[in-house]
Image 1 (cartoon, one colour):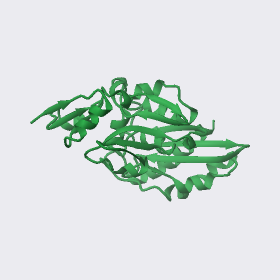
Image 2 (cartoon, helix red, strand yellow):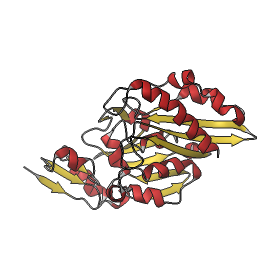
Image 3 (tube, helix red, strand yellow):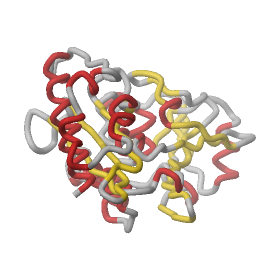
Image 4 (tube, one colour):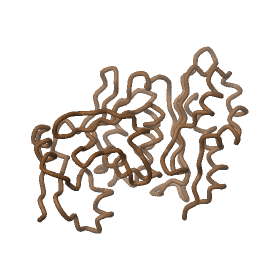
Length: 275
């Protein structure tokens, strides 16, 4: 039996979650193509729940899961979230950005999801709502593999949270594809850098579309920490970047090509974040 539910409040949403598993619908830009136009079973539409949409800043930056990419791109956000806004205008075309949501992008868990590296660079957490409680986990723990997340059947992703500690400095996003627009990434990098007195006081670098899930480059971050900004490009060697990279072969590029591309993209993103 097909059931379509569109709750208009958080209590109503929780009531539907308690009734059993659903196909969760937000913008639908990933769900409809994957279902080939046929949404079997119960469908739970989140777009009318007020608390699941919008952006608030109160120490932490909270983005409701149903917030669209256009809303993110045009919001007044701190410089640390600049990479997220740069990624927002590269998620598909304008029509996709107007309806596609950040929560759907994360739950789809594509290795090439543009929004993930900028969020990882800000130490993002995700908020998951069930019939009985709300829990938060790190985005890096939420993403468990291609199309695989830590979301339980009785949960929906309700918000993405960028902690205040991850909002220092400025960020930059660089994406490589087969063409300039409307393209799935071959590789992409987000970097967030804090500069004090000509040295790097804090840094976070995340690479996407190069491995099963996007990941932080911890070795590169440790090498840059405390370094003179004039030494950045010389410190970001292929060996340093390869330490935490596990590039994949697929139809878009070879692992070797991705390894080479990642070195250049990391340098560009770090320099862009320091600009």
